[in-house]
Amino acid sequence: MPPIKLHDKHFEIYLSEAEIQQKVKEIADKINNDYQDLNPLFISILNGSFMFAADLFKHLTIDSEICFIKLASYKGMKSSGHIITAIGLDQDLYNRNVIIIEDIVDTGKTLDVFLPKLHHQQPASLKIAALLHKPEATEKQITIDYLGFSIPNKFVVGYGLDYDGLGRNLKEIYQLTDEA
Ligand code: 5GP
Image (cartoon, rainbow, N blue to C red; front, side, top):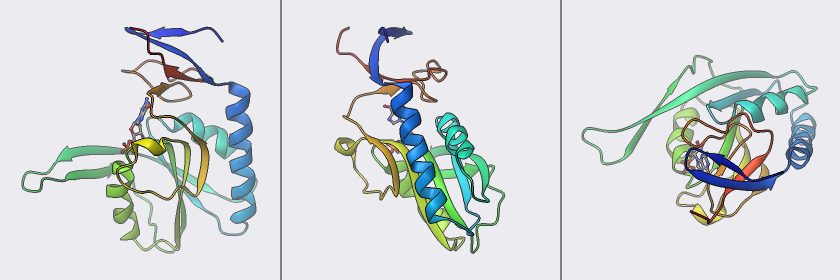
């Protein structure tokens, strides 16, 4: 695939559509195997994970449910920490087998703040499926139970991920090039 330009930046192909689709199918196969008769509840974190969530869900053959949430992040007035609220999380997680669907785990800060909120509702189990992980960017250690690809610490777009709004529609994943 040829390089692309979004706004002012250039990107080159990093993962092809076939590589992504193959990996998504592998993850779905594992989940089908691990969650038989458990009716897992998937929580897809918008916006970036919508495409991964849709493709993954299509490959599931077990009973399963899905909901979509948005995380809003703001600085607390008194605390120096990050506060995250989940918009659209109206399901009761008590005793459910929950699987978070994330597009990418970068520093790990988002999930580090969000996961304890979910644990608070006492799900039977709580696992994470992430398409991409940047190990070199890790600030908060997050265990990813179902991982697509470990990638270098470079900005990526495509397959749901954007650069300033653009690029989500791409079937492939592209990496920022070094050229200006
Ligand atoms: P974390 O809290 O793990 O640092 O950040 C996770 C979120 O940051 C992801 O869900 C995603 O929205 C955004 N993000 C991190 N790295 C990238 C990247 O390379 N490209 C894009 N488009 N978004 C990213």
